[in-house]
Length: 102
Image (cartoon, rainbow, N blue to C red; front, side, top):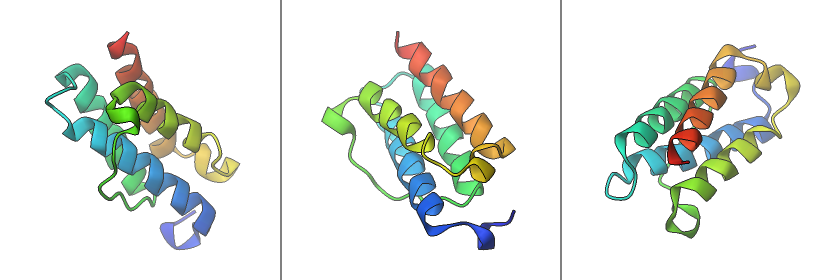
């Protein structure tokens, strides 16, 4: 599967999730490095999978709900996109960031 074969629905989900995670990573004033770096990595991986991240507001100005929203969006990806290495690793990175908030 190439980015040219990407369903518009899946592209929108990848874009949303990448945008949210990138925004979390960019908010260094409220997010420690152990949260920011995995979020930035996840955003980059989702971009490599076909997402087109743009500036997004944090949900409730907080990292946790924004990461959870990104993971929730990713769960709605088509199976062929969800099982790609980039998306799976992005999910793992986002989970690491979430765990670092605990």
